[in-house]
Length: 258
Image 1 (cartoon, rainbow, N blue to C red):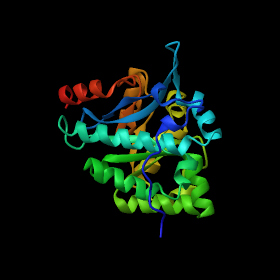
Image 2 (image 1 turned 120 degrees about the vertical axis):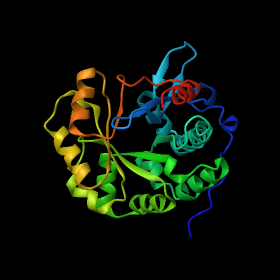
Image 3 (image 1 turned 180 degrees about the vertical axis):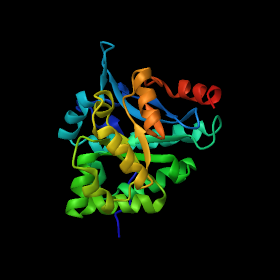
Image 4 (image 1 turned 30 degrees about the horizontal axis):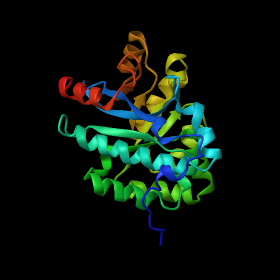
């Protein structure tokens, strides 16, 4: 039996924490449907606003959070808030979904699946409207070791939550792990897209063969958008579509761009 997920511990009782809750914000980057047109969802991106006003991306402060034992706690709050936003967005576009990044440590959390199930129930959000972005190297490692991380992916998929391979093209070759993991989306890394890599058409073709949703990340220029569209990707994300912004602006976009 899995341990029951406990309620989030108040951050107020962690006064010496180097990452304070009041500093943390979630911005959302829109995701567009290439073939059908319109915004269909958004990726939740954690940011830290420093007292100076400087906004840090997650890569700048999450290693510190992990080192001080706060990563899982922060991750739970991101999942909770992102699911709440996705539930709100249904008033503007039914079926709008949200993606949330999941690290190796979060994926190994024994209470993860129960926590996610409780959050989905609390927000009355359909499980398929939550997508977990898991780095390619973590997916590959999990497929190889067959341990708790792989089991948690399978249990999340059984709930109806979608699993995406994030940063595809930067880790292990996709054919080596895809047969063993319950993924439904392949997110091709922006460096592969922007670098005009020969991996790009190969990954698109592989995703299509396996009937996965294929998303091109980091699409910044119109010519890049034209290229991935011609290759037949399903979804695109990047500056050519929109920068990360507030949840209210995403709601406005969903209302206007359908």
